[in-house]
Image (tube, rainbow, N blue to C red):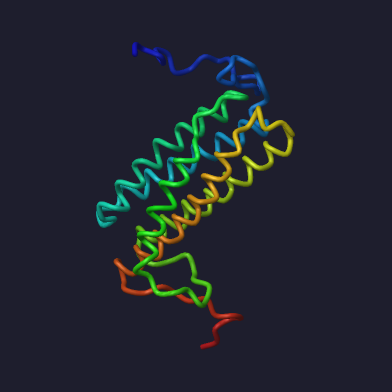
Length: 189
């Protein structure tokens, strides 16, 4: 592949712009940059989650695959009109989601984003995923052109946040045996 990044700094962004994958220069806070930047943040948060030792092979292998998918999604968002994310990506998430959710008790109440370290990191990734999804939908609405933004990416992020929620539930039970149920109002001692 060669040395694609032989020099890390270019100084081309020192005036508040950045280059998209097609060479176009845009503001660093442009909607498209916010979208792929948040996907990158999500990918980093999943990397942090993967540093936990107690994930189990199903969750670990799925998250590694998700990281590759997110890199594809970021690349896709960086180049208007480019498509890498396919419906099969989302279907794979749904299969894992169904597998993990099958052994969980039905959820009758809201749970707090807590548990052990892996569960808490999973909840954090879930919230970043939701923000990434919102950023992608903002981009879709702003461009008003389905050819410039692949809708599969937004669907993928929606399903991924669901999967991360279920993973957090599985990990909470694995780490400390329970989930913290939300109780309306303040607890009084």
